[in-house]
Image (tube, rainbow, N blue to C red):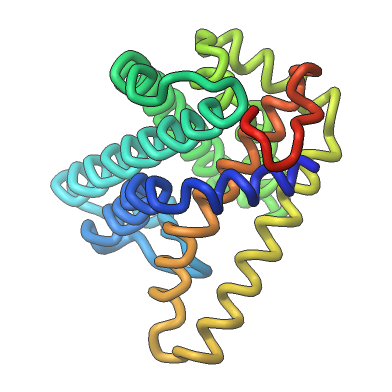
Length: 246
C-alpha cells in the first residue's frame, strides 16, 4: 500500500517533481565540475577521500565549495519533494508551505548533511590510515547515515528540530525496519535496471545516462517513497480511499 501511494504521488506530480529534480542533477554534477578527485559511477558522484591530502590548498577549496553546493542542492530537493508528499497526505497549501518552510528546512538539512559528510570523511580517513578492512568502512558509513534515514521527512513534514528529528528517525526505523529494507531493495532494483538498460542502449554514455535517470526519476521517487513510509506512522492516514483526495 505504501509503495502504491508513492507511485501514485509520483505519477500525479511528475511535472513539478521534474522541475525540483533539477536540483538533484546539479548536486550530482557540481562535484564533477571540480574535477579530481571525483568520479561518476552507477549514476552517482563519488569523492576519493585519500586523494585529498595530495591536493593543493586551492584544489581543496574548490572541491569543498563544490560539495557544499552539492549538499545544498540535495537539501533543497529533499525539502521540496517532501512538501509535495505532505500536500498529498495532509492537504496543506503548498505555496504557503514553500514560502514559510523551504528556506529554514533547507538550511537545517544542509547543515546536517555537511556534518555527516565531515564525520564520515574523518572516520574513513582514520580507518584508511590504520589500514582497516574495506568492509569496516562500509559498516561505519551505515552506522553514521542509517540513524538519520528519516530526518528529512521529520524536519519537513513534522517541522522538528534536528535532535528531535534524529530521535524520531531512529524510533521509526526501530518500529518498522521492514520499510527501510523494502526501500533499499526498491532503490537497488531501480538503479540496476537503469544501469543495465542504459549500458545496453547507450554503452558509450551509459554512466551519464544513468546519472540523468537517477536525478529525475530514481532519487525523487525514492524520496517520495521514503516520505510515505514516514507519514504512515499516523494511523489516521494509513487507509486512504483509492481515487479520492486525502
